[in-house]
Amino acid sequence: MKNKIKNYIKKNFFKECNEIEKLKRENKRLKQINEKLKTMNSFKDEVISAISHEFKNPISIINGYIETIIESNLDEKTKIKFLKKIYNNTTRLSELIDRLYLITKLENKKLKPKFEKFRLDTVAKNLIDSFDEDRIKLNAKKIEITADKNLIDIVLRNLISNALKYSSKEIIVNINEEKVEVIDKGKGIDEKHIELIKEKFYRVAKNDWDNSLGLGLAIVEHILQLHNTKLEIESKKGKGSKFYFDITSLVNKELQQ
Ligand code: ADP
Image (cartoon, rainbow, N blue to C red; front, side, top):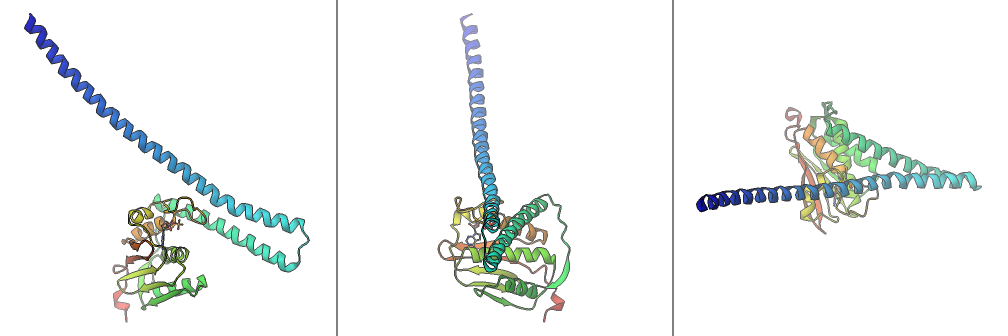
């Protein structure tokens, strides 16, 4: 009888211990999920407040100028100056909406690229001319590629605007049969951020949201994926960055000189 009781206790004791271990593991897993949800929630709040800020800022500038035009007796020259400011800010708003729309379409695979043959060096030259910035130096070979011209234009525009935004020195754009490179000698990026900056809404300087939502590189990466290539980044904090991508599979070789 004594032995029977002993065996019973032993058997159930181990069973209980196993149950407790199981519960502990489950508890740990739930804690981890909870932490993840908390981080996601605070990231979501951060993104919402950034988007509101990016919209509110130009709207209040526009309202301010409109109010001044209506209420003050301005001379023609000042009026035109203020109207230009209004125009710049409406453009900023419309670009912001375009970016949000584009990333959503790209993410949902709703954007079908329209492939055509075009001269990449010409597209790059026209784009660089439109920046009206003498800091950009283009070294481009005559290259014809088959790709979506508008989307490739967006890729170059994003990479060059970033280079201009994060550097005050010369920007070099190299184009040859193998790759496209955008090089700056600006603020550079710390190693720990390099892979993350391609994520949607990821920004290195979290408190500085002005004119920046962390969408540019995510858009670039999606577009390059549609062209079976990818964005590569080399950067050193304080020294500058090189953003580049391979174009060998897009180049029309027989048309090269
Ligand atoms: P944003 O619109 O915020 O510039 P991006 O997706 O284009 O969004 O870039 C994400 C982040 O990567 C930026 O917030 C910036 O911190 C960093 N970054 C991008 N390009 C450069 C660059 N040329 N030099 C330094 N940092 C850069």
